[in-house]
Image (cartoon, rainbow, N blue to C red; front, top):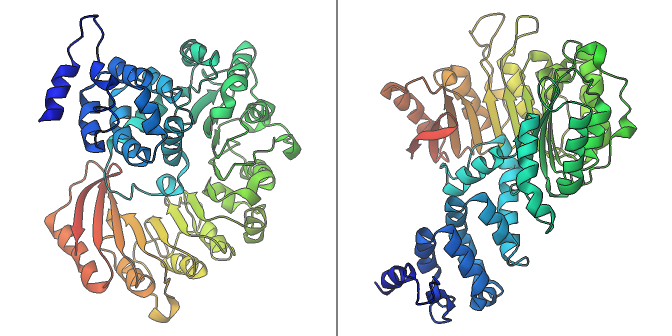
Length: 476
């Protein structure tokens, strides 16, 4: 009740017209419990919040004390939820040693956490902090030149005080095909990255052909401005005749890079596609922990099982899409000794060998000692039909550390899935099904899924996902 009265008092200006005199008292600001501050932050407007941080000397003492460990994690979601971006940026400059560190480290873990890149939110909910970060990322999507101009105009005040406009560390850009083109536009982009590139930890870039030829020398120039890059997503639709002879040595050193997603370079030529991607792996592959690629790369003769290990020996997370039988055959031979998470996504086309159940078993057997989670986002075939071949229990080896399996809802009633779970997943704790948003989940399907609790003694929950959000959770 006392806190409520003080909140009412907070909204009244004093005789000099100044608000927030409450917070200038050491008895009422740092001495409040974090739970009280949680409520106060909900009621403060952005201007009042900044006034509190900037005018109350006790706040600096609090932020430098041990209480900061309890206070900031509790109130940070509320701060990000109601404050505009400009206020958050200014707030980070108030206390560089504590406040800035907590916000930056919290945002960075959502930017580069491999579990969030390759899997679902382990807390099974969209928190206010996650939602805020998602919306903040959207602000840094510079797909057109007018986006870049607006961004530079808003970021100009920060450049004068060495501020960071990339609060989440994420940047998305598009080169060519009505995006940012060569010439003056490219120079403007390079100038922006020269000023702010050190703040970027995650880059997603799409490259298209346009009126000005955008070559990979442009890409090298951009990457050279990002010394702290950790996560790189590349996608290209450049016609084969426009792809230059690519020199791996022109790629700049990126000592912190640990995550690489490359879906395509050349539009049609599979061999050329693989050659260009291999240039990146030859340059950065040994430092990568996460790698995601298109199935076309693994089909190429230039990318055999031996090369996959030689170029990327330290991978812990791998994602391949779309899948095909040839990709699976190679995965079953690669000797990645640290692989913990594997995502096999997509279905084969009519030009490639179908994916068989035995392919899945061979891959899991290959990584059974280290694998902790697997996503089987595939439908299996056998000799052109959906009738999946039978596998004897002796051919399935237990993966002792495999605790989580994610698959498509179409596989719920497939015998191969339950045979696989019984044969290889004795220690499974979580089973996840992905469902299209337009689909319904009949009650009989829930009952079908519940049989997993009887088959797997350590299974704790079964989760059904709609649009990457958990809607139904079954517990033991």
